[in-house]
Length: 477
Image (cartoon, rainbow, N blue to C red; front, side, top):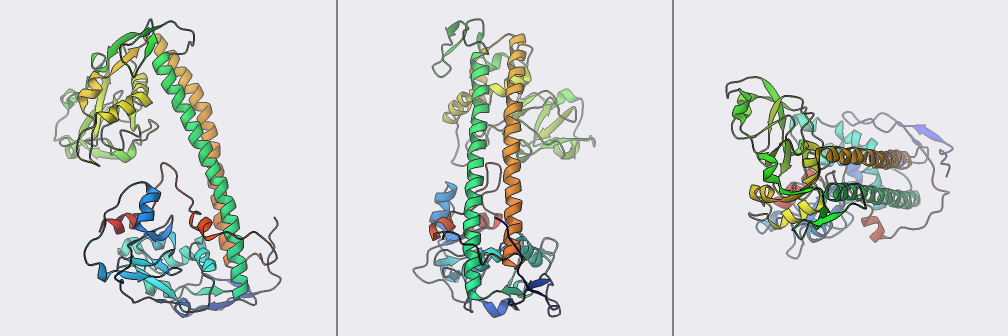
């Protein structure tokens, strides 16, 4: 599909003093209008029958119940001072505390939202679909960001900032054509992204199956087997030793072995949970003086294996073999169990053992504590039964996992890059179309239903934030 520019353009006049000059040229028949001419703050407070809404960058402004269904968890419900919240009508727009990063959110439902948000009510005959795309385009968001240094000044985007960014206004029929085209293109791109995500998940599952199979059964499919004596482990190769982790691992070694002290000002690696991945990788960039972290944190040494013990990090398999730790020793979050492998077991093999489906699924049944704060007890890890191959066979298994994982990782990287490129294309396409840099009036596309539009969220992947921080804060108050 070849997109062409309009036949005639005009240069945009400089905006009023203090307004952001973000529109340079527009189709000759388009207008530039002050944003407060098209939208005004809705002043109405919550009605008695209003449902609670959540403002999310991923899904727009939707009922909290729908938000819970989409993210698969409950959120804190507000039960007092509901009358002070702001009333929202469908097709309003909401300025939330993260709008300077992700644009304005379209409201899909009637209800109420926190009073600190700005609800924008259209006052002009507009097509809301056109402005939904405009308010999310990268050029418009950049213009909003230019109205203030929000992070430095610690302030939220407000109606004053919104008013400093003038808006393009195509004829109504053209707004409809643009919205229809972008809805259709967005739906096509979203289907592409979802297919790529499914492929990535299948590849990750294939990689995990390779690990599960090889560290519990070895590489020889015809090897003689013997009962392990444990139901969930099943049979193991006959020449492997049936043992428990406590017999081949030292747990939570003492920091006294370092010879350092709480007065030591030397810098060492510090690992908060977010710097440990589910893929066994660690980010060693954060350094802290030993004196600052000597007490109250978890000690480990290069070559140790760390295992997350708190939900959901444990179930997700967060952990790593610290063979490449950039300092001789370090400290990290208290939510880690440290395993020091002894001579019969290699550290990397131990890491793979503690990331198998069997280990994580059985461990989940042993977790204790209140909901949301459940932890795996150390005794479960100590008593966990394993089949242990000879050291030479462990190395063969590790070499095989690295080879197969490398091939799969390359395929995953290609798919992720394709997602990245199509997102960049979509962002540029939307900006070019809503600002009139290309003409889509003559392109006929199928109509996208409202249900399809609401499902158009480019749902974040496993390692991404599903909704912006503002949504989380909103539901927790």
